[in-house]
Every structure is written in C-alpha cells, then in structure tokens.
Figure 1 (tube, helix red, strand yellow):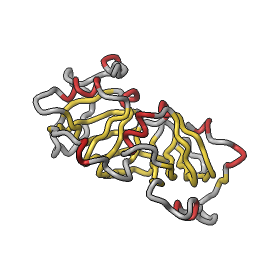
Figure 2 (figure 1 turned 30 degrees about the vertical axis):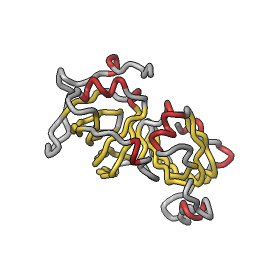
Figure 3 (figure 1 turned 120 degrees about the vertical axis):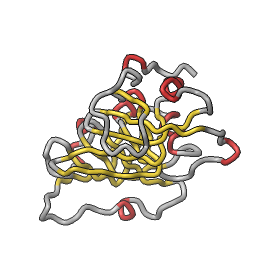
Length: 212
C-alpha cells in the first residue's frame, strides 16, 4: 500500500517534530457523510477520513473497488518514520482490515443472525470476533458466500509494529475475505490466539470469490 502513496505529498515527521494535523483539522467542517477510516494493510496502517457512499461502510467497501481518503496519517511496518498525506486512493485489494464507523444501516434491512466467534489469521494480524450468519448455518461455509468485505463484531486485533505490541478492541471490524490466510471457529473466552489452524479451518484455496 505504501507504493500508492504519492511521494510529492509525503510529509515525514519524527518523534521530536510537530504532531500531524488531526482528522478534524484535515477535513472541516465535518458532515454526516464524512466518516473516520482506519485501514490495516500488509505494510502500513492508515488513519484518515472518507465520504460514506452507501448506508453503511461495509456496503460502500463491497460496492466499490477503490476509495479516496483525506487527512491521512501513515504508520509503517518497515521501520520508517510516520508520515501524513493530504489525499490517497486505496484499492480494496490492498485493504486487509477496516474499522467500521458511521451508521449501522436501515433497521428494516437487518435480518436475524446467530453469532459465531472466529479466529482469523491475516499476515501480521491476529483477529478475533463474532461472525454473524443465518441460524443453523455453518459460519465457515457461509463466509465463502458473502461479498469480500465481511464484518465482525466485538473484534480484537493483535499485531506488532516497530516493536510496539498492540491489542485493539473495536465494536465492528470489516475483514477482507480475500486476504485471509486461515479462519476457524473458536471459543470467545480463549485467552491465547490459536498457534495453527485446525482441520476445520478455512484456508485461502477454499475462499472462492462471491458469485452473487
């Protein structure tokens, strides 16, 4: 994802430099259609804002293949200094995880689901959360029939960036199914992340593109 950040807009800053502009400073005034956008990729974490084009952020991510972010702060996995950029276009294929923000969508469109706790391995990220599928269905099969960006609730993200071990908890996390290494059902109160997938885990070769 770093390769797509325009070099002419890069503003590197170190620990002793002035702090980058806040999201509110980068995009004022805020409107109901503007939402926070925190994205996790293979080589960096981006924090910015975007225009919500849809009822929910999940819908927008599934309906479009790239997204414009403004007022973006960039944390790098390669040990380089953090940076800020005014604007960047990010393709969906380079987004592994996105923190959900904004409205939850129309109540009338919601369906009754049964939550299943899952563990998801994606590169540097260990992810856990509740996947919601129709009652009586196998969540490990159901996720294959979903569109590529799949929401998890009560999610937990664990990763290490530049020696800093992070354990983040979010209400809703949107996972790019096409970037999953493996996914398996697990107990919600399990203290440790699984060290390896079981035979019941979904591997990438079983994650087929959505046909609907």
